[in-house]
Length: 224
Image: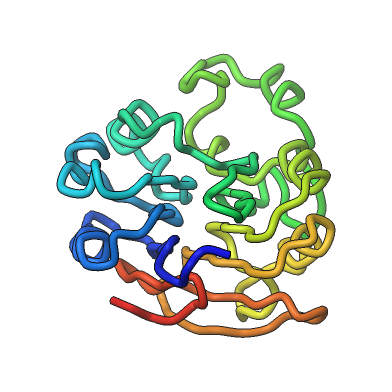
């Protein structure tokens, strides 16, 4: 198994990448995984140029990464665009890591209220303006879509990284718990709520909430 510093997990930077850079320079992990809400004023490769040759950088989007075309472009059209693991599983060392970006939005799907739109193509019939490559306004791209959730849940992984929180957080969702169980994961790392904590779900899945602009290691220990 990889060492505890082989992957580090970064909470929502919101424009502050100091912890990511300093942690990577110190620990030299195999990979850095950023959990959304970047707040980029420049393309991501410029922000992380100092560590570009030290560690692989993977990421999932948060809800605020869709707040404007420039925030979106600086992330999704950066040199790290291919390292977006939202909706897929990647191998990092001996670990399989799955990613689920975005948040639950009532105008698409809130698991506590029900599904309004299951597939993007259903909503597209009612929308005249193309704003992203999928043809959706950015605010709808920020949503967790049922079609993506179902497809990812059919895969297997050791770790699940999400922007949205599981049920152990007061504002979390049991749907994240269920996904983790279906995929057979042992650990969940999430962002979005800006404070550090650790918890354990039923079935022994450990959860780490990463702090805003902070970093945790593979065991969920706060390192910055």
